[in-house]
Image (cartoon, rainbow, N blue to C red; front, side, top):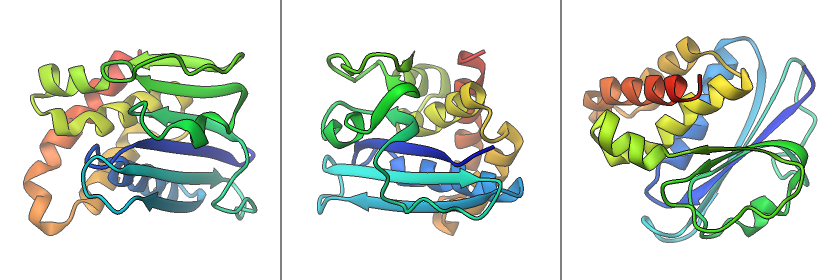
Length: 181
């Protein structure tokens, strides 16, 4: 494997930072080298949020600010411009088709529409798990990390006051994984 980049973008409150952390921890658990960089606006809910994850078999050489990406997850259309500008032909892109308005507008990408918010609300039973639904779908489509490693990473990533949500997040990962089969 060469370096694989993921840009995970959305709006604050969608769980983008947690989901990116779960992917990074899953990759580390599988013996890969990882860099993770999260950035977000000043608002807790509704502001911009972006996470960059770089995964490799060898020490990561790419800085956490990358000019183009191997993959992207687009949870919402707001604040997506800087991510879309980094897509290149062949980039694997997962779009949350429940809420994403408009086209991505880049030719040659490998686009997958995942109704993550709908699956989270209807199948999982909690709309707040949409990013984990998308994470399960991402793992299945890219094979970057395994579902088992993601599940272990969820347990390690949730703060102690949120451990009651572990099973819900596991169900969300399974839902995204199954949807993408």
